[in-house]
Length: 246
Image 1: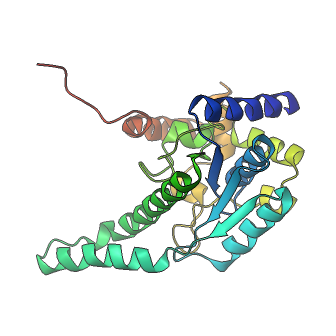
Image 2: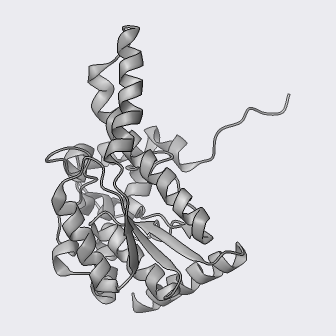
């Protein structure tokens, strides 16, 4: 794993160099994946790495955990609160759709959460543009395979260094990098709403997805869930689809 870390650090340097840019930025959520990426880009670009903490209707504990990540790797960071920007944007959408009688309360929670993810993406690129940085994503192999990310949200990035690593491998990497143990053991959550966890939303566990990706036997119920998630999220893993040239 240490050898893989070293190769990832060099790969990050190569990608930034080939783009003719200066460094890298990552959004730090307080979870294990963004913590590992923060450590990686700090190693790759000691003087040209940046972590953004972007609270948006967030649990204050997430901010505390994100700051622990910052302290553990020594990365420079900025805090940009997007709560008011989200309220203005999503509130305008809600008001207009209610005015014409086409607002869906059933779909509002997911729309609200995805809008927050996309606001964070927009913010990351605005800051990256200012410094001449690439935006580094945090999705791991399990999230990438199942489509457990927001299209043009946390999936809207330049580099995805972790997509060949299972959740277990990301945790192993975190320990070698010096990520705080409480972050490594924290229940994975996108912080979309109170009490939300990744595993409760997906209907299976990262352990099962990791085993599936490694070709190991898992219960039929979990296999069907994983394969269904993969199939319906195919569109997230490719560029916008164009028709053939007529």
